[in-house]
Image (cartoon, rainbow, N blue to C red; front, side, top):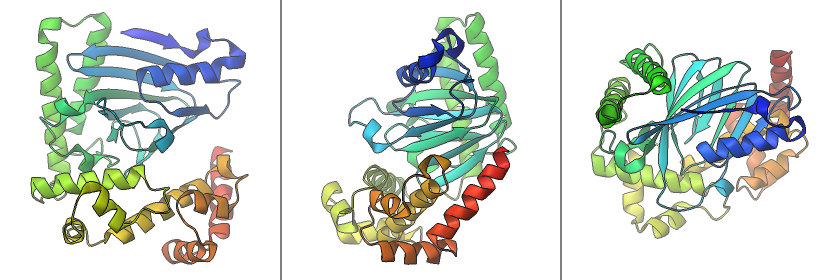
Length: 323
């Protein structure tokens, strides 16, 4: 496995240089250390058959992959993220989960995500080409951003096998067996997801596939004020009736899903110290709202308080936590 250390980079450009290392081995994103002066990190990268294995430890950081980082192309990759040490908060596909030691989540390179990690965090990422993953998980988008707890199903076995393989990759794993081992690991992961989320995969495969396609399109265009059920149906060549049927199982219409996701992203930025300098209206409009009163009204209906009070409350709580 190749090893990269932030400590080997010049201090005055360390954060920017480490961001380039991260993007080169993972996905294009903005990696922002909470403390640039004292930031340190290490990244190890290797291959296991069709998988790329990346093990990263770092200080408190904010990793944000937005729509501007994503370009259409054939190189779509999914990453199983195993939190080895420390804690991380991962937001993706409308889910926000807190990852503790031994927990796993799934990330799609074609959709925006954010990953905020505490000091002393370590994570192992198993990066899988979409064509390989779909041999084991036909609709992986259904599981993106969901929390696979350390004590659920076979998660403990998955974590133990992953860490054991990382250690073996350090010393050298016989290439002839790497493909077989990689597929065994993927099958173990798929079984663990099936055990933990059997209710999620109950719909027919065709409907699940279409639902995943629609959700991905929404995630990629959530900031567009023109995003609507009609524009989704036209772009994906679906009838309005079929689009309604896809969402019927979730008991949420496409319009309600778009509104909820926009409110969630606004709430996340309103509560983020890094966005303190931006007005609430600017944040709302950047996520596709075009009426401040409408935004305030729908925000209050969802969160039980005004956006201004939400910001004051959440920023105060966050400041106390980091103190």
